[in-house]
Image (cartoon, rainbow, N blue to C red):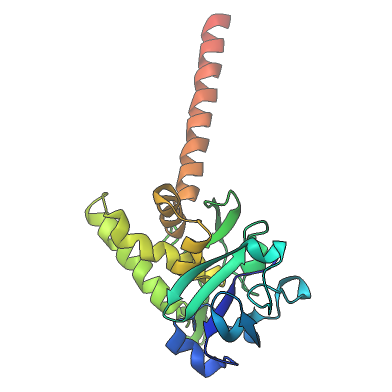
Length: 247
C-alpha cells in the first residue's frame, strides 16, 4: 500500500518552497519531499511527489507511465486539488492510517472514519481544562517549571478548538458545516492529510465529523465515566434488591 500521491502538471520537480503555493505546506509538515518527473498518460508531463520517505520504503508507480495503461494504472483514482494539481491513490489499495501517520502523534481518542479504519484524533481540551497538545515549559517566579502555551504548529488548532468549546458552553447546538473544518484540522495534526485528501478517500460524513469533534473535546472520556456510573448504580440496585429478598 502507499500513501496519497500528488501530481503537478508542467513541472519537473517540487521543492519545499513550492508547497505553500500549492496549498500543501501543512500536509508535508515535518517531512521531506520524494518526487520524480514523469509522463502521466492523463495529465501530461509533470512531477509525482509525496511525503518522504515513501510508505513501506517503496516508491509507487502511481501517476507515472509512458505508453498506455496497465491493469494497475486503470485502478488509479485522481481528484483535482487546483488547476494542474491532483491527488491520487489506488482503488484496490487505498492508504491506511499508518501510511499517512505523522512520525509524532498527539494522544487522543480513536475514531472510526468512512473507510472503516480507526484514526487517532488529538484531544485539544481535556475535561479538566488541560490539553494533550504539546506545551512549552516555563520557569515560574519561584523557579518551578510550569506548563506554558501550546507550541507551534498546534497553537492555531488549539485556539479553534477552545473557540468551539466556548461556543458550546453558550449553546449545545452548532452548525455542523461551520465547524467541520475543525475536524479536518484535528486529523491533520496526526496525519499527512488535507480536507481535499480526506474527501478523496471518502473518510468524512456528518456522523464522522460529529465523532471527531467530540473527540477533540474529550467527550468519549465523559461518556465512559457516565457509563461507569450507570453500571455502579445498576449493581447497587441489584444488591439492594437481593438484600430485601434475603430479609
